[in-house]
Image (cartoon, rainbow, N blue to C red):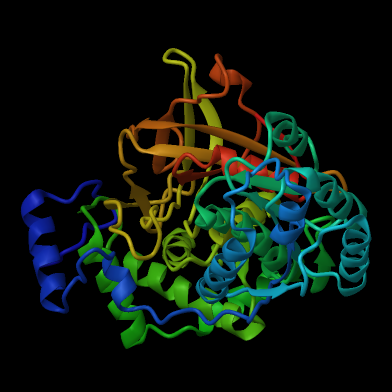
Amino acid sequence: MSTYPSRDRFHVPRRVFLQATAGALAAGPILAGQPAAASVLAPISRRPKHCVIKCAFVFPPTESLRQVGYYSWPGSGFDAEGRRRAYSARMTQLEQSLGIAISTYGAALDDEASAVAFAEEVRHSRPDGLLLILLKKGHWPRVKHIVETTNVPAVVYAPLGVLLVEHINEARQTAGLHLITSEEFDSVEPGLRMVRAGAWMRQSRILNIDGAETKTEVVPHIGTEVLTIPHERFYAQYRETALDDATRALASAYSRGAKEIVEPNEQDVLDAAKCYFALRSLIDAEQVDAIMMNCLPGLQHPRKHVPPCMAFMSLRDQGFPAGCQSDLSATLTLLLVQYLFERPGFQQNASMDTAQNLYFGAHCTCPSHMNGPGARPEPYVLRSHAEAGWGCVPRVLLTKGQEATIAQYLTGDTPKMYVYTGSIVGCPESVGGCRTNVQMTINEVDDVRDVKGMHQIIFYGNCGRPLREFCRLHGIEAVS
């Protein structure tokens, strides 16, 4: 008895579905806390990347203050030299956990001449970012001079009780500077991730499957390389990809991981798995960090390939950004979100539920690992492609009440990023839209029709503030 619906059926009866999933489970275990597909896919090798951060401590010797007889903030009991030793030890740990290199300048910067000399060294060596650790209120001008004269993204850390509100608000208005005032030195980690993300974006390469030409371009400002290859190269790779044991194992994983199978039959699911391995062959051959594809032409008659939506789900679940319709802004945003927050995103068509004043986004692919590769996946249903009417795609059911962020990086010499936050209200199964449909509230606007953008990325977590900080650090205008 068939465990999949035929082409002329639109729903799998519960008895048939349970028999199908029972058979799939017998073929192999589902790993706890992971989607079934994750247990059968090899990791994607990544090109090595680097991030070099130049660090300087900014404070006078405590003995010099003792001789003067007045300490000002942070006060007479503050052990600046001891703090330096403790922070240096923690920086060694951060180097290892973040995969970055922190090079610390020898002596602490005290007088104006030392700050000028350090700035000159930075201009010569051009690190990816700066970490300036300020331990004296009166030395704030030294920090300002370094930031203003080097044009290198700077993370500045000052313990509580070092800076006053005027300094904090001045930093807030300064491009290229991310200030943290906290007793917890670990609070510098998000800032270091922002620097790292900018560096990694400049070293990244996106594979674009579109058109009939091969060409390479570099995205202005953010520096990411885009390698475009012809559609025909993917079409040929798809034709040559075998329905082998690996493909059948992935297809089985798709089925046993699904909450329900509606339109797709067995061949549809096998072809969806085959598409993943065709894309993987190109990814591995070109050693890229993300992929995007103008997929819609190949779905029309004469059909060249199946919808790549399951493949895109699996790639994103593995932490590998995959953008639909060769949308560069969407793919860059997926890549940036992955680097900053280690989470995949849902690229979607923007619309609104005007009756309820809710944002409505929809597309025919979405990651199931919305909380990241190591987290429990969201449930999904196997459906046909909504607009093409055939194939196998996921309808992912996002968690009601989950906080989420909407972001879209807009390319150009003066780039922008749309940033919104809110909470997911539900995933309506509509006759319109696409297969994964989501409704969510928006915090930044009173009227949801004021939300800007198309093909924005929705990802889990209220990350509006760190995204805006990233934008200021890297000269990007944040718009909400």
